Amino acid sequence: MDSASLVIFLPVLLVAVWFAWRYFALRRRVDQYAEALRNQRPGLPADVAGLENLSSAVSSLNTNFAERFSTLDSQNARLATVLEQLTDGVLIADSNGQVQFANPAAQRLFETPHPIGRSVAEVVRNHQLIEAWRRGQSTRETQTESVELPARKQFLQLVVIPDTHEGGSLLVVQDLTRVRRLETVRRDFISNVSHELRTPLASLKALTETLQNGALADPEAGPRFMGRIVTEVDALAQMAQELLDLSRIESGQVELILAPLSPKELLNSAADRMKMQAERAGLKLGVESEDGLPNVRADKSRLEQVLVNMIHNAVKFTRAGGEITLGAKAGGEVIRFAVRDTGAGIPSESLARIFERFYRVDRSRTGAGTGLGLSISKHIVEAHGGRIWAESEEGRGSTFYFEIPLA
Ligand code: ADP
Image (cartoon, rainbow, N blue to C red; front, top):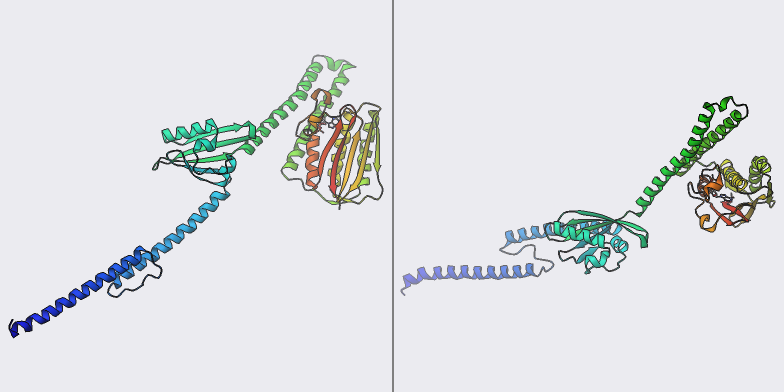
């Protein structure tokens, strides 16, 4: 090579070598950078020489992803809390029917502490509910099924929502026991009220028809039938009043006017009101109470209503010659009031039920009475922060107790 060619060739060679060197250096940095990204090494260089654009794009992508992940994390945490606190059970099953997720409510409602990985059939353990899930799997349509579990006294409703993408399903189970119970109470209440209305209305109709058919002119039968009409109307009015009372108390519309009240004064006042009625029934009504009892904090007229109702019952269910005794005793933070009679008594299986609305031990024995008095009393006593109960021996008599906190 002559010197002229050398002069041309050498710079070209140098430039080529320089480009090649830059190229390989860049490649090495790109490889290192890619490796760092792959390993998600913390502290990724924010700026890489020669790759500033790429590095800033990646770093903004990185920030973007970090923000999204943090949003997703907090959304996940919120969702997990909701699922954990939910009173409805939630199960997620895959296409093979294997449980992938179950919230605590689902574990509780299906009484299965470790449902993950088990089959839906193993967890649900009720053929009607399993069938509903199977129907959902085959039709891919939402299914709703309700079952009563008598052994557990529970009423469950299951909604199966098939997942259209993955072939699995979401199962939501609700405990409708309380709703059903309230529904039954409501239905019973309406049927009881209608029944209680029908009986006096039927006798009123019969009495007025008899009067229309000539008894009105009869000097003996006329006034007698009129008297019975008045009694029936009074009973209806009392029932209307008691129903109103009960509904007001139950819905919290009755405000108690609480003030210090002497237990003895309360007993005497109730006894005075009922003395005549007891005497007319041939019963002795007495008050046995220690002197110097501390005051209770109570609404006098409401507590007197409770005592009067108890004495009224005692009069109704005690034969002439019997005794009714009112008493009060101090016991810790409360005064325990008692109304004792020597009457018919209450069978033990009915003792817990007599405080229910309309419950009467023996309808034929009761005569006039709505079965509402004790349930009203229970509400009044509980509104005072006290408790009420009864003890009894059939044929020997009953004692009704209630406790009221001290003033
Ligand atoms: P009512 O007296 O209007 O029927 P209550 O709610 O006051 O309604 O009483 C419910 C039922 O409890 C009565 O029907 C009766 O069967 C029973 N009972 C209440 N008090 C007595 C008592 N002192 N002796 C016997 N049975 C009673």
